[in-house]
Amino acid sequence: DANDLGKGTYPYYMIKEIDEQPAVMRKLIQQYQNENGDLEINESVLSEIKESDRVYIIACGTSYNAGWVGKQLIERITGTPTEVHLASEFAYNTPLLTKKPFFIFLSQSGETADSRQVLVQVNKAGYPSLTLTNVPGSTLSREAKHTLLLHAGPEIAVASTKAYTAQIAVLAILAECVAKYNGVDSPLDVAHELGIIANAIETVIDDHEIFERLSVTHLSTSKNAFYIGRGIDYYVVMEAALKLKEVSYVQAEGWASGELKHGTIALIEDNTPVISIITDKVSGPHTRGNAHEVISRGANSMIISMEGLDRQEDAYVLPKVHDLLTPLISVIPTQLIAYYTALHRGNDVDKPRNLAKSVTVE
Ligand code: G6P
Image (cartoon, rainbow, N blue to C red; front, side):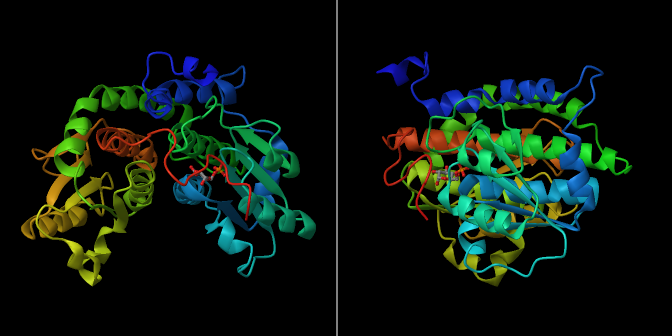
C-alpha cells in the first residue's frame, strides 16, 4: 500500500523514525536559527513567558514524559518555576493556579482530546498558551495562541520516538530564547549542543546490535522489566518503560532508583531484567549502588551510562553530551530495546494492539 512506500528499505516505521532523529536535530537547528545564526522565537511568546510567574506543561503519553525533561530545561535555563500535568488529570482535578500562568501544550498530533479539553478551559479563562506540535494546522495549534513546530516529519509508528526527542529539543531552544530575552545567561549554547547530539545519536544507533542482543538475551521471554534512574534519568526511564510496554507488551516500569528500597525491590528475582540509566553526575553513584543491590538479588542487569562517569567496564557508554540534554541521547538505547524486543516477540511493531496514534476521545 501507499504507506509501505514511505518505509523505503526499513521493515517498520518505528526503526525508520528512530534513525531519522539525527536529521531532525539538524533540521531544528536550521529552522530556529535566524540569518545571524542565533536561535530565534517569536517575541510575543517570549514576552508572555517573561511576564508569567509559572509555566504549566500539559500533555499525555510520551509527550507527557517529554514534558518532565522540559520542566528541568525551563527551570534550569530560565529560572521560571514549571509544573507538568497529565491532561486527563488536570481537566477534572485542576490544581490551584498562580496569578499569571503560561500554558504549554505538548502534542505530536495536535489532536489529543484530553489535551484539547484543558486548552478549551485555558482559553475560557483567558490565559496565554503555546502548542508544540508536529502537525501544522492541527486542532491544538489552531486553538492555542502560539505554535512552535517540531519539524520531525510525519510520525507513522504508533509508538512515538522522534517526536519525543524533537519536543525536548524545541523546549531547549525555547528555554534558551526566553533566557536571552530575560537577560539571563544561558548555561549552554543549545544550537551547538544539538549539533553534538545529532552526531552522538548516530554513534548510538550504529551500536544497534548491542541492544538487539540485549533484547534477545534479557527481554524476549521475560514477563516484566524495570528501568531505574534518578533526576533527569528518572524522567527518561519513565519514557523507556512506556515504550517497552507499548510495543513489546512486556510489563515494564520506570522507577526513581532511590525508591527501590522503599518497596519495589520486592519484585526482583532471578533473571529479572533491570536496566539502569546513569548520566547524572550527582546522583549517578547512588543509582550505581542500586544496580548492585538488584544484581545481588539475581537481576539480569544492563547499565547505560554517560562517558566520563562511573566505573564503566560493565556499562554501555553513551557519547558525552551536555548535562542538561542527556535525555536526547540516553533515550536512544531504550527506543532500540523496545523495537528489537517487539520484533523478536513477533509483534506488529508499528501497530501495537489496543493503541491508536492519536486519541480523540476523552
Ligand atoms: C496516544 C499515542 C501516544 C502519544 C499520546 C499523546 O496515546 O499512542 O504515542 O504519546 O497519544 O499524543 P500526542 O499526539 O498528544 O502527543
